Length: 459
Image (cartoon, rainbow, N blue to C red):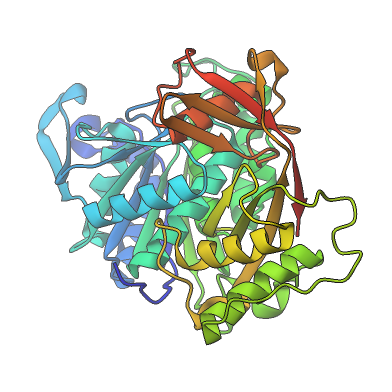
């Protein structure tokens, strides 16, 4: 697929998902949250004005895998309200299958575990928002995604990958985060009361109104569990998708008459004039380490002139580094989306400098997950070089540490590698699940060979 011009997400919103607010289900009780209904109507009108071609729905009660995100890969996405006594209320949307493929590629490139399913009878976290917002989505195709049990930081990274995929596609996209807030607001509610409930609602409303990403990503899990949180994962994906863009969030309503918090918010996205991936070009810092600078110079020489750079480094440039080692060169956009990454776990050339030049060029031009880097992109790219220690076999997970060690999982010809100290990967279990997913293995498969290695990350 040819590289399309980068296009920002044109609109985003947060929608609650209680089936009772659908008139055919609530039979009048929906009027108890009239402010919510009015706000959803406003969002639908605003969304329609932006003419989205792609609707990205972040659901929370769809097909769930604890260590992987789930994406619908089918011709149509369909659901109804039969479970709630209204089987005649049915929804059906065409799925953007080209977008499915690009999102899969981008997630793989970012080391994010993502699986696809061919069948998903849309659940209420999908059907309720779509019921109210469908008038704003005329002519749009759907991309339906469900969350996982992975940390908020991983959901944020998934949002960044979604954004990069949307820009590759060149679609006008609207992003819908389905999210109820606390489920513990009232002793009379179905889930009872906990003091953490009202506090969670207050903090999340403030975080969305101020667009305080750190407040959402750093919310303690124990606190969220006490509060009955149903919002942080989908909000984290939404905030990742809008990372680096100039946004204007507005909380339009916030109610909780039945013991559950319902918030509607709109997010207008400013034009990207003068921006590169949502950040001023001056915000892209120059590489500091000579090898990272060499990677940048090698890519620019090859992309602009077709020249393979002959490395010339100061005598002390490689101080503290081995003469030969495995190397990975990563290229990212200013917003953190991966643009290319190729390397080897063992040395393949006479020197580190030659490894860096070769893998920098390959990352920019030969990574099969991405189109080649163009001259127009060069000013907005950021480079890093990982120098690997020789992999050593380990007998079990107890020898691993995701902050300190990278991991290689191998079973026959299948192999998955994950570098260390990746944001959002906090436990060995998460690290192994992602590495196994990259190898095409079941996350529960324990009959695998494990290797660990360290890296020196040079930027």
